[in-house]
Image (cartoon, rainbow, N blue to C red):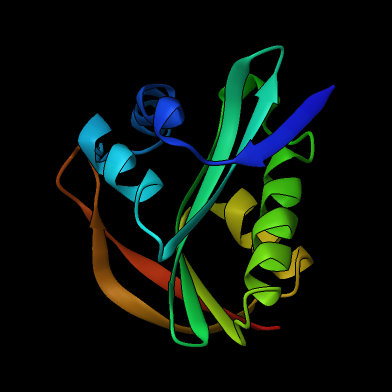
Length: 148
């Protein structure tokens, strides 16, 4: 069974490792430690038997928020973990007077785009050439919004 808890500083090392295995651009542990201590950052961690299997971080400014990242351990993908993380963070942001949430996904991240649509996000634009792949190619970022 999964348990969901607020993202904390002691999750930083595991989060950095999970993020590194999920994305081309890696974030250092110190970034996750700073996020955990930033009052404008909202985060949720998902654990299975004390193992971090997913997390989500969002930054709130005024009545808007941006999902900075969401990552789920490979063997737990397509099992609803990402959807639950999104639901938790959206609920948390709603209860903290957020009206709009934004996020982005790479043009070729079909599972993320399907998840965002399923949770009610609407595609509102794109950033051409935003993501650089390990081979040096550039991919567009699709931008999404959800009104709470």
